[in-house]
Length: 127
Image (cartoon, rainbow, N blue to C red; front, side):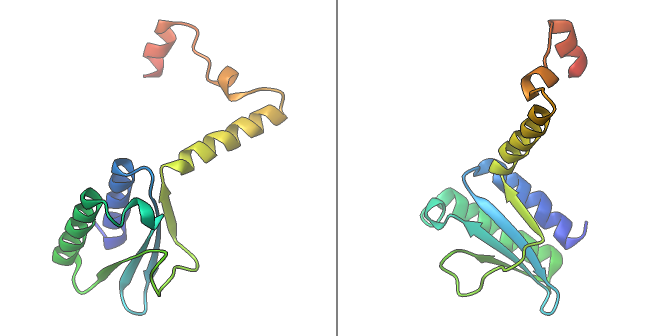
């Protein structure tokens, strides 16, 4: 697994553990540094569970991908990610569903009718 694939996989896991957080990712090719900006700072700066997860990720990454490095940033950091490669947020799925619903409504339908399940049999088939 390539380093960026590992990071994307792990950030998805962390996003599921801490849905209030948003992660922005950027790879800096000039110094082989993977930048991860975490927001909002007030949701993680004193959260010991998150701090342990972040520290473990850094240790694991160093063991697997040295000399590449992993750098976590926050709103308080001097460095910033101007243009991200990826964004990881539990809220992004809500935005995607709202976008789909808006598109359907423009055509005179809505998301509820679009995915309507009439019976238990249909539900079982959908699974």
